[in-house]
Image 1 (cartoon, rainbow, N blue to C red):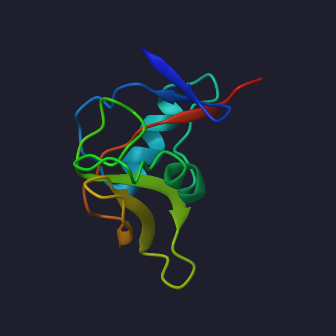
Image 2 (cartoon, one colour):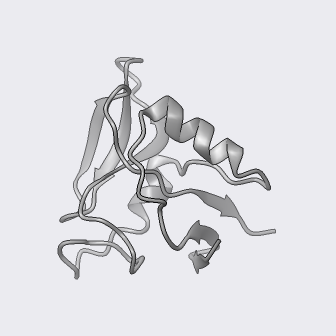
Image 3 (cartoon, rainbow, N blue to C red):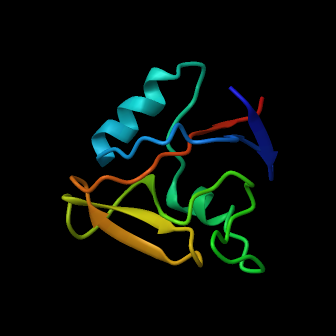
Length: 108
């Protein structure tokens, strides 16, 4: 798997092109092993690049689409936070929606 280091975190350089529900995205990250996980919403926000458009992302191989974070919505447990990388807006979506997942891990 190709990776990229941004601000002290190791990111997948590519998503695998499969959209998943939030639970499936969480399980996918866990299945990668070796400390891979779905990023928090704050971590996902850190790769937004507002000087770019379509996608507004610091990672080259990023889709102009929705990506899940691991952060659930505090008000409604049926929702979780994510980002649409066309321009970088933060959204919350129903956990049953299908979005992309880009996993991350801390660098030792």
